[in-house]
Amino acid sequence: MNVVVVGGGVAGMTTAYRLMQGGHQVQLFEASPELGGLVRTFDVGGTRLEAYYHHIFSSDTTIIDLINELGFGDQLKWIESKVGWFDDGKIYNFTTPKDLAFFGPLPPLDRVRAGLMGLRLRRREDWAEFERITCKDWIEKNVSKRVFEKVWGPLLEGKYGDAYDQVAMAWLWSKVHLRFQSRRGVSQKEFLGYLMGSFQVYIHEMERRMRAGGVDIHLNAGVQQITATGKRADGVVLADGSRVDADAVVAALPSLLFKKIAPPLGEDYSSKLDHVKWQGAVCMVVTLDRSFSPIYWMNIGDRSMPFLALVEHTNFIGPENYDGNHILYISNYLPQDHEYFGLDEDQLWAIFEPALKRINPAFTSNWVRQKWLFKAPYAQPIIGLEYSKYRPDHRTPVEGLYLETMTQIYPEDRGQNYSIKMGDEVARMVVEDHAKRVSDARA
Ligand SMILES: Cc1cc2nc3c(=O)[nH]c(=O)nc-3n(C[C@H](O)[C@H](O)[C@H](O)COP(=O)(O)OP(=O)(O)OC[C@H]3O[C@@H](n4cnc5c(N)ncnc54)[C@H](O)[C@@H]3O)c2cc1C
Image (cartoon, rainbow, N blue to C red):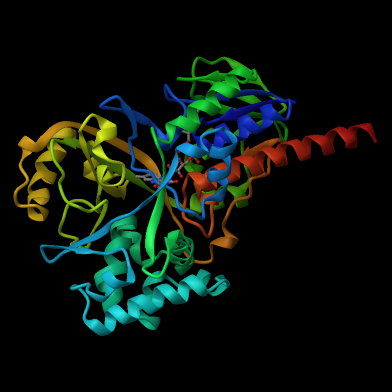
């Protein structure tokens, strides 16, 4: 079988890799100059670093298996995380139940309620009811208005903007349920996974194996159109107008980009693609000559601040791995038309610098060695109520055309683990459908 895969993020790469292992002929087209998609990396002090902070949880078993399969299991380290919370001009520890017991922004009774909420969601297996209620309504009704106002509200608003009150409780259930599995022992400390040398290590190895196994990888090769004869996909057209024929096409792209290049998909499927809006991400990475705070992941509860979270990577993976540089991510999820998408590094720094001083008054720009700015218009789908009804299938209405996109990950939040899992599943479907077609043709 001759298969074209469009999109070289981890989902598309996994499908291409599995099809190659199955002995199929694969061509992979990626619009950007490198593979990896949102897991792209750059060099800091001689070591690769993700443009957008990445770690994994112990529940991410598919990526753990893949890393082991590719031979890097011993480079995958599980490290205690230090989560903090900035509000009312102070940094609070926010990792363990003990931290919650001393969490100043909530009165004592609400701290207990917030803790019980975590336990309740952790134990709960049946989440069907959570499809029909928003996080806001569920928390206000079952926990307390103040817990929503001081904790979950700011987090949801930071991630989903104006849509913060439309996000289904199913999203929060899966986040808490899965994240709790990364906690250990009586103190419930959290351990997060990181691949030493960056997640690019496994991505590069997959790329190396694909090239060695005969996958035709085309970089800087955006697909302009997926074509079909009648109701059957038959290839793609590239930016230079050239045509590539295929027995099957797998699109591993953000859903809305897929819709722009797909053949007619019919009203039902198209409306499912339109149903989900996306948030973009604007992420600045700065290297400092010293540490900014003792926290790895600092949630910003104060919504007057111009960012959602600060991630000090070197409080997770030490600065000795980056030639002594301390690495700070300044992160935001924003609507795709937000003004930050139009600002350059210096303009954004002028906004961020005074806010950083509010957190650490000793901070000055003199600590900064280098800055990088990364922007991704398709970073996080916004999943609303009763999404099982709207989730598009991997098999599209056009025969031989498959979609794997982050809006199909549900009820879990998107992440490398689920894109890889989807990549595996779609590769299996392509092979199954082909086998059926061949046997039908013989019959
Ligand atoms: C800020 C941020 C933090 C994150 N943190 C974590 C984390 O801690 N842990 C974790 O596991 N995950 C994290 N993620 C999520 C993770 O990066 C994604 O879930 C995963 O990388 C998605 O992979 P994908 O292949 O599905 O999509 P993408 O990575 O979006 O890949 C799609 C690819 O398609 C290409 N493309 C688009 N249009 C075309 C076209 N017409 N022709 C050819 N190619 C095209 C794109 O260039 C891209 O390479 C984070 C994401 C962000 C934005």
